[in-house]
Image 1 (cartoon, rainbow, N blue to C red):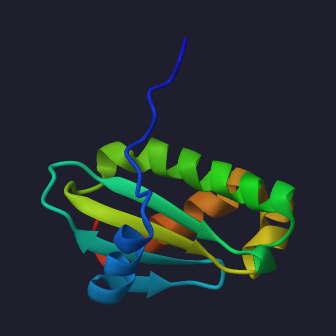
Image 2 (cartoon, rainbow, N blue to C red):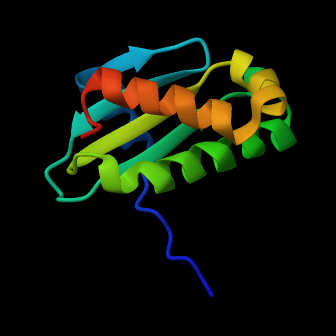
Length: 117
């Protein structure tokens, strides 16, 4: 069975617009930036720089963020572009706490920023 891909932000200008015009919430692991898009669907973008860790670590963090987003997608308000910027401390945290820790932090941030129903 093949999963359909999540709608995502691809272009640099889309990311820049969310950072420049959107609102945000921050924790030690992530910062979540949100901007209304008017499309009737949420789009997710993940930014993980080299300070997070090597490619294996960055991709693991991205996978966990995507899975957390997928599981809470039904609980989110729609029509938003959401960018999750991964902070350097998240690389090590992921290996200690795993998915549960990532999910808790992202849920708190989404609630704080007001997109969680």
